[in-house]
Image (cartoon, rainbow, N blue to C red; front, side, top):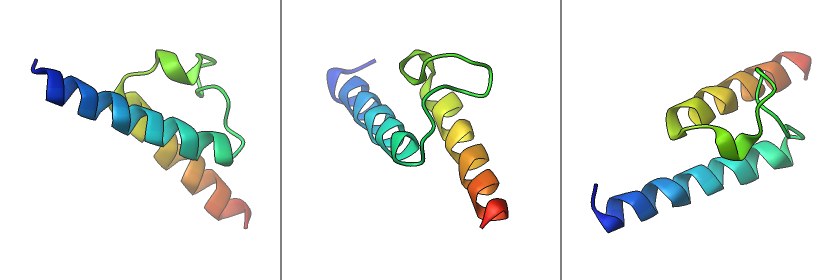
Length: 57
């Protein structure tokens, strides 16, 4: 994997983690730390949290 691609993935992960933290989500649904998750896992977790918050509103 190229350096730029790896940096892009790290940037995307950091962005999603920051969004999850703003939504008061500090761990994944399976009780792992957010930094432990892969990009696809973070994306899935973000969708779950958004859906949950949307249904509560």
